[in-house]
Structure formats: structure tokens, C-alpha cells
Length: 348
Image (tube, rainbow, N blue to C red):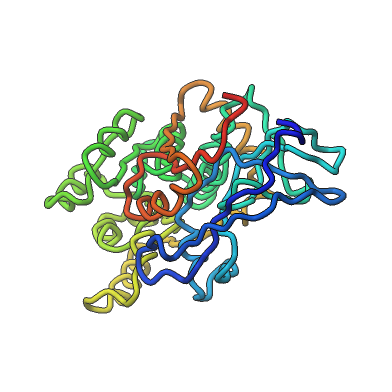
């Protein structure tokens, strides 16, 4: 695409209001704007793939968190794979495919230094938003730095059919551990077994706790937490002495508008932490970027190449599909990494 074929306008999706509970269509607004031009040191990017990630739901709220909330009227945030269609920086050429953070938008202008060039010969460029991107890195760093699985140990991961959970289980297998995945629905359970998990359990099953006990006869040494809620309640009683719990996400709580009913579980949790010498460690993946990025790219690229780690992508079509796909992801509808194909992929 050259300057003569660029459109004169583009669409973007902004936050129209803060969602109350599950996001709905009226929480978003599509705007059409004139196509911008890059200033010195900037690039104009055409979005190819948009990443949809659960953490974005937290940023739609004004509650205090580890990242600043979006403001009403802001473009909804999100990682993107883009094609450079105009450049005012010598480090980026028209036609380069880059990793960026332009959000829910067909086009965007960013400083060239805020992009990373991708090599389509190494892996499909979409993987820069999934198994070779932030989700894969989250799994790699959280599991190996906090979980530290040892050969023969049992690693359990919730939301195991998602991009983080599926990578956690497969990396655990690479390290010689048993991998047990927890997911919602028989289709996801079957997918986990296809990926090589030693056991997979449907948390919606009436006998979920019994299935978990059967799948972890020697208890649980590492539990990678992505969900919280009833899944955590079931796992807690199975944790062994010295078990490690990397706390990555709590997706079951992201749409809550009030505290769940029931007794205060904090005393029981603290008793378990004390009497079983448990380690619970929350983390945000960017704390490991400086120390683990090089090893992650090397190892994960190798494991994908030799088949030790496989991945799946769930791709919605067109920017307009993003709100519905996002809400569906929070309900667990997706299988694998949830992406939106916003524009044509020139590398496909």
C-alpha cells in the first residue's frame, strides 16, 4: 500500500461509558476520523491484528489498579500487529510489519521507537500477540520465576485453554512436571488433551472437585492462578506443603459489581498459608521484561519449532467485531488466543 492508495479516513472504537458488569455494545462508540500524518520520528500504522486481553476490562474501570484507567472517550487499549504505511523515521520503512500498541483502531500514529519489527520468516506475525508475545511471556516468566516446577511435580493451571494457561501447561511439561488443566466445557478439555496435558477437567462439571482430586492424587505443587472464585476454593484444599501459587489473573471477578455472598474465607486462606508454608505471589508480567525477555524469545521460539509448545488462535473478523468478541472472551467463549483481524495480512 502506498500513499496514493491510503484512505482519507479511518475508524476507531472508544470507551463511551464505564461498563457496569459485563461490557455491552453501548459501552463503546465507533468514531470516523481523518487519516493522520506522521511527524518527525513517527510512523503511520495500519492495523492487521488486534489483541483482546482480559486485563483491559480492569482498565475500563476507574478503580485503583496497577495501571491507569482509561478515560471515557479514550481509544480502547490493546496490543496490535501493524504494517508501516508511512514513515518519518529512518529506522522503519514502508512495508515493515511491527508490534505496536495502537488499540482498537484501524490506523494509528506512534513514535517509531515504540514499535518492534517482526520477522514473518520466524513465525506467523499474529503470534507476537499470543504465544510469542505478552501472553506467552506471562506464562513463561510467571511459571518459571515464581512457580519453579520441578521434574515429577504436579502443576495445575486454570483458564488452561487460553493463551496464557495453555502455554503454562506445555512449559511445565517441557520442565518434566505433570500438567493438569482446568477449563470450561468439553471442547476445551479435549483441546488440552490434544496439547499433551496429562489431565484436563471441566470446572462446570457437577463432580469437578472429585475430578480434581482424581487428577492430582499426590496433591498440587504449583497452581497458576488465572481465575479465582470457586476454582480457587477447590484447588486450595489440594495444595501441598511448600506449594507455589503465581497469581496472574482473577477473571471470574472482573465483571463483578459487588462482593460475592458467603462467609469470610480469609482466615481459612491464611491458616493454609501458615500451616502448609504456601507461597502466593501476585505479579504483572512487565516486572520480568528486563530479566527474562531474551531467554523467553529464545526458548519459546525453539519449543514452537520442535513442537513442544503448540498454540491456537480464535480470530474475529473486522474491527466492528471487537466489542462482542471482548465480552465473549470474558465469558470464556474463545478457544486459544483471542484476536481480531482488522486488516489484510501481507505476510500470509
